[in-house]
Amino acid sequence: MSTFVYMVRHGESPKEGNDRTRGLTEKGYLDAKRVTDILKDKEIDVVTSSPYIRSILTVEQLAQQIGEEVLVFEDLKERIFSSGNNRVSDKELVPLLEKSFFESNFSLEGGESNADCQKRAIKVLKELLETFRDKKIVIGTHGAIMTLMMEYFDSTYDLDFLHSTSKPDIYRMEFNEKKLVNVQRLWGVNIDVNQ
Image 1 (cartoon, rainbow, N blue to C red):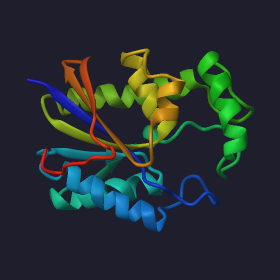
Image 2: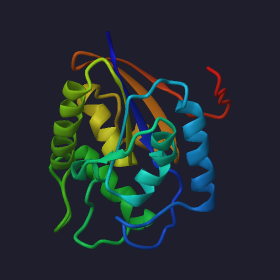
Image 3: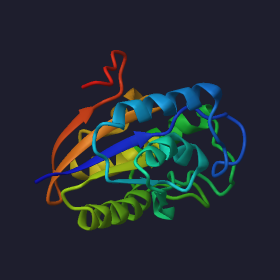
Image 4: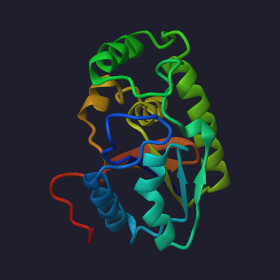
């Protein structure tokens, strides 16, 4: 038997505001419905999420559809880039990500490194793989931390991969025990919800 983890990167959110409490834009809400449509027939057993509102909102409809609550894990939050609670601008973020993926222990003052972020997230992911073995798990997540979790199992998931992802995005990871055996992208231009 395999355990399937569906990484669901959150939908589009407003560029301003507190990182923890920013919700979704109108497009983000519409895309969250598409996420639900894609995953509703996959026999999902459990829906988990980062504590950030935009991630919860992206997977909440799916959880309701299967009659479950979203299980929130603090350590699945996005990488902390700086000491403030507000979003780091795109202009600042790109060079920060480049340096971080080149130097995994690099962080700004008050922020966390890729290595530290990956360590806390992988601890949760391994617990989920243990607790929900042979089940189907959805994780409402963010771009950087999703990439770092995937990179832990396969180094090809790097900065180029992160730049290739969209908001939202869905990756189905298949595990045999705790070994990653397959990854398939489910979000794309030609989405057939019946597949």
